[in-house]
Every structure is written in structure tokens, then in C-alpha cells.
Image (tube, rainbow, N blue to C red; front, side, top):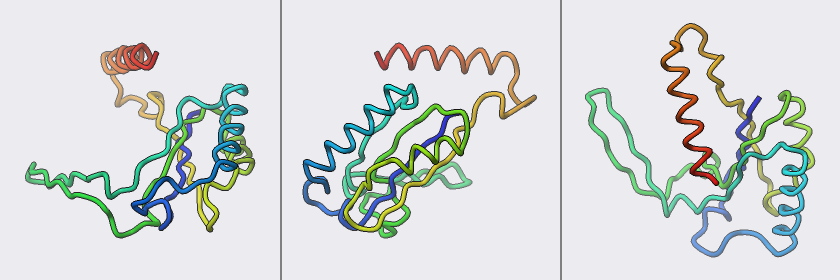
Amino acid sequence: MRFMVMVRATKESESEGSPVADQKLFQDMANFNEELVKAGVMLAGEGLHPSSKGARVRFAPDGSRTVIDGPFAETKELIAGFWLWQVRSLEECLEWVKRCPAPFATECEIEVRRVYETEDFGEMMSPELIAQEERLREQVARLAK
């Protein structure tokens, strides 16, 4: 099972200054990431710039698109970073999260969400769609190298 493990943003992580961390936190996170990699859990992981450097695109039922520039008001709804993990269960994922260094010096949260797999869609996925999905995953894997 794959899980997206998301570090929720804080007011500090959304500020315009440099990234909110000190050398000890960077080292602690690097050590934790190394544990994840050695255990075969971590597939990807990155920190994100504040929403002031991003945008959203709103899709309307009529087909129009509207670009909304950041920053975004609801800091508690934003993501400051993420991992993509491969584990056997939600319980295993949560055990890893509990071992994670606190991402920020202030109160913060990490959200865990399971990633849909092709088989989760059952009969909706035709053999052609499954083959297309597999080809795309192979292409993405080659690009990542």
C-alpha cells in the first residue's frame, strides 16, 4: 500500500523568510529519511515553498478555469511538505509517522492518506486503461532516474 504523508503548514512555514528549520532539525529529518530509505519505505519526499509562491486553478462546471495566486488564507489547510511511502498497512505507516521528528518547533500535524491503486477501481478499469496506466508508470520511473 502506498500512503501520502503530508506535513501541514504553519504560520511560520508560510512566512516569506527562509525555510523554518535549524541545522539540528535538518539533520534529524535527514536521519529519519535515511531510515525510511534503508527500510524500503520512502518512495519520494520533498518540502514545499510557501503558498505565496504558488497558485491554484479553479475549474468551473462550464469548463472555464480561473487562476488564483497565493498566498492562501487558511494556513491549517495547506501542505508544507510530503512523503510517499510504501508500507503494508495504515498501522505501519502511523508507526513510522510517530517516529518522525517534529517538523516545526510549534504545534503541527502530519496527515496520512492512502493512495488509490489501479485495483481499487475494479471493473471501471478496462484492460486498455490498466495497460496505459502501467506504461505511464514505467515512463515516470525512467524519468525519475
